[in-house]
Image (cartoon, rainbow, N blue to C red; front, side, top):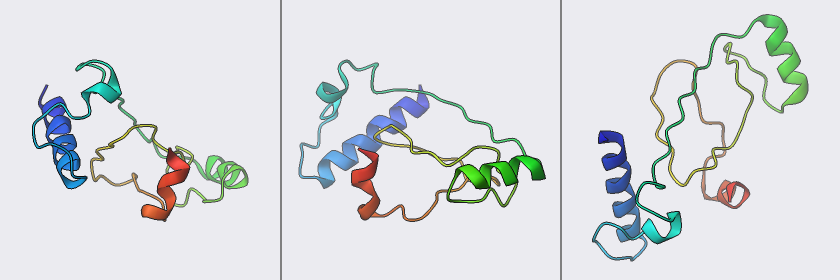
Length: 103
């Protein structure tokens, strides 16, 4: 419930920054109903073996150098909140130029 409230508050701030209304609910129509705006996915990235890292390096443009056991991917959400723990990272470029590819 607290993460859902945080997500709604962040979406409200994004709406205001884009010139939208300051009241909550600006994005609700785009997501269907009020519950659809929330999606919880927990990812755990266990340490990969040297063999797994070598195999992944053959399949992806980024080698799994630090034992990361998940291949590169794009999140299919409007907003992603990451816990800053060892093993998780955002690959460059995560700037405006990469946004059209994620739509």
